[in-house]
Image 1 (cartoon, one colour):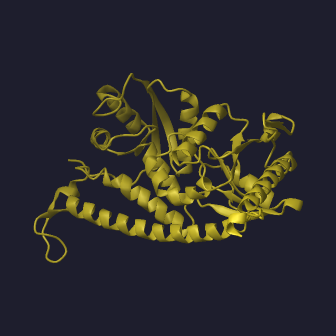
Image 2: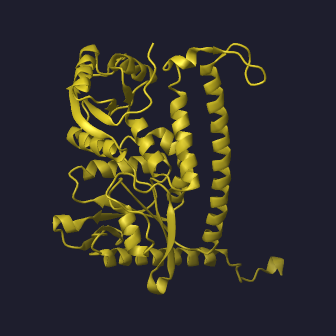
Image 3: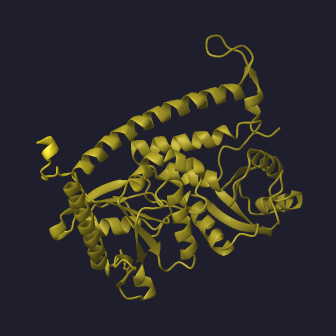
Length: 385
């Protein structure tokens, strides 16, 4: 039986080609994820398979090869750019005699590092516990030992059963706390809606420049860095747009392809800011060769959380690196649908402000029309006179 190692920082990365597209981009993203989590990448193991092996994901021969590479580089951690089943993770750790984590666990670890607010920390802990709860089965030798107890546990309860019970209780507590925070946010949102203010959320792939754009527009000083998931907590500020007045602009967590469902579920309260927005500014890294896939990944998550039908302005960011001139494009309804700009240098942000101003004017006109419809008719009705 194998006791799991507690930690590991010198990592061997594993990328298996199962017929997906953009393998090189996926691998480059894995390297950034590992480095963002604090791991030192020693080497990368690549292979091609028609389908994952049910027991080891990579097959027995490839697992032995990974073990040899692991020992050759004196590494102590293996990171798969795939989602492993609990059984596959357990079997790999027995064969490799080191800690093995998958893409989901890696992203959860980064979220744990980045969470700053009280609510963000609760959301990350909830996602981690729900992920861990599926991986308690015979993975650690201490979980199989019988433990008797008076008052705390029933006689003969195993450590595995105890851990399951404690995790269940903690999950229930976290959900209760998050529900209270969600109710408080809902009250604040209702108050904002009564002021009839246009709500705009900045969304996009992680590291596309959302927080840099947010700071450039609002001077908020939100944390921005050239790293994955630099921002986890939603930040909202007023943005003054001249004659149309103020709108509310929100900076949100970045998305990524194959975003773990546990994170989407745990962060649903934070993502509600996006779901309840009137308009989305979808920030795209125009210099990325994988930008089309990144746009698709963001739109997939938006659909998953119920924000797929919200109007978008596509911001083609980082034009300072590509030499593309600042400009905008209109759609068939004469709305500005795409803006080419640089949040870093400020070039083209006046065009984005123009687009937001036009949307705020449309929003205000819609409110006036609704108010007119609600006004009582002054038409004389002889039957009720």
